[in-house]
Length: 242
Image 1 (spheres, helix red, strand yellow):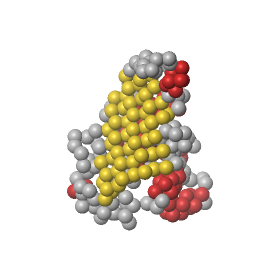
Image 2 (cartoon, rainbow, N blue to C red):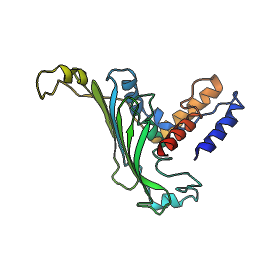
Image 3 (cartoon, rainbow, N blue to C red):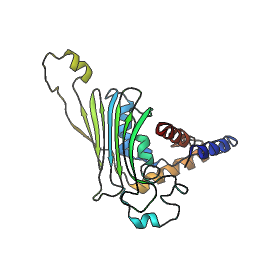
Image 4 (cartoon, rainbow, N blue to C red):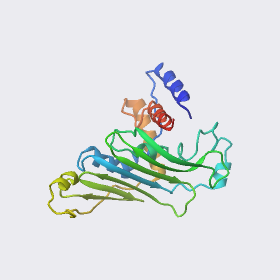
């Protein structure tokens, strides 16, 4: 819930290097996001220039927040939608597989549609070291649910909506085409490919993270996410906010 708490936990974990220290970032096991990350990491689409993520499929009722005294409080949870339901998606919203934003400008609404002291709606613009721009919007009051993620790169676009993923490659890299194309306005050739990535059930992703954690203990296999990564994400967020 704070940088200080994360540092303290990491310091304690460092005293026991024989133990496994992991954290649940279950969306790293979501086949849709894994496929999109694979496309970007492979370099097939070129350098990422824009990321747009709209998340309104985490609808929460007043009863949900009233179900536990720690929920949606500064002391008990540290925040609401940005620290729980959107935590793993915020981390995925990056300009490149390994990149974190160096500047974040956000509008955060506290208790806008719920009787809570922390936020239930967040809109942000993220600026990345390579010049890429990210757009992030998360609300907990809309129904029916909707979620879409789009990544635009030099040589194509990857777009996910609900459980479908589409790839739209371009015949030429856009910056190069813009420099060398003699026509004043021109759409260069592109085509759409529907990608089959399998089912993404909410509970299955948590199960996969747990299985990976067990495998790390039993066979020293890699974790989905090291526990120390929580400090890096929390520290980056609070530094930008300051």
